[in-house]
Image (cartoon, rainbow, N blue to C red):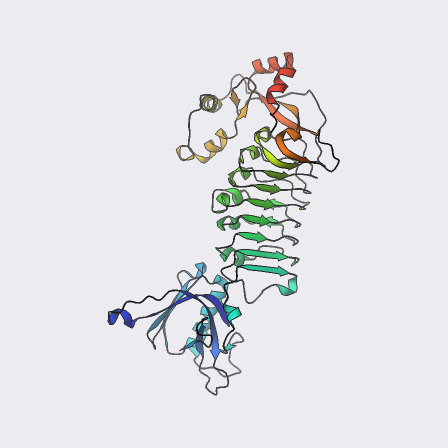
Length: 429
């Protein structure tokens, strides 16, 4: 069995002899097996580096004092060797492979020198490795199920990983251990959901296009490493995807969002709060109306054709609370109206979410749960610099949800509709 990781070998005699050691972790390949062309059945650990491809050998049976595995799930372990008095410290290893490696050492420690018939199939012939095997691989592309690394795992230093046409039905847990990964492309597979564990990776690009995704965990967009790093999210061609997380706006650095050719019926209500969003592709969905916050967007490019935008209508839906709004609503309105600065650390998460769901009325006030709603048909080209449509109709209008904060504003709306519509019309980019 072979394992690629970073290894630091430290002599325990150095402190005794008052010798300072400057040993640093280097990229190595570890292997467990027997020396080639030798009648001796003794099993060794071989550690090969770019400076010594032939490797250093450490006997296992009756020569391992201790194995420390407390942080094995983080790809770390240490092996204490009796002779020579060395500590082998392993880091940045793929955790599942490291577990198998340690388990094999324990088997050899217990059983000693094994005959050929008894030797586990994982034992390797300890031949010199090639320099290519020790290269710090940063980019890996896998096309086709026959090329998928089932036994050997992924290089721990990967920054770019593409796995396509492998018919993956769920995310390989080994990918979650790639802590340096910044670009992950899982397009053209059979994934059915987006696991929230991905939020612990520092991804800048996540491509999940052409899958069968139908479930998108709300936890995926909670504040995490991913929420402050992700810049491109591609969910194109997932025909079973009908909704996006309401917390999508937590992806504070999101620059490009592609959800074309899905089955979305609406967009998250706070999508307009993603200030970094420049490219938005929502073509060929089932979207009927656009959220009020959509008017806040200032995009470089927008694709919105092929949706089911409803026809212009004068219908007003009243959701006023009777006889007056709740105390929570009145307090939130006052905070927003007077621009009282409230930080996320000062309020409960639910209240922070509530305050950020504010809807602005044409009178300048705000509303939250007590309001009347109507549709304002806005030329979408005024929300972006480049508006793309398959029909070439740059005058396409989108029905944007707008709100009235009180019965008084509702009466004003009925008496002067054109003035109210002009208030909600966005200025040209």
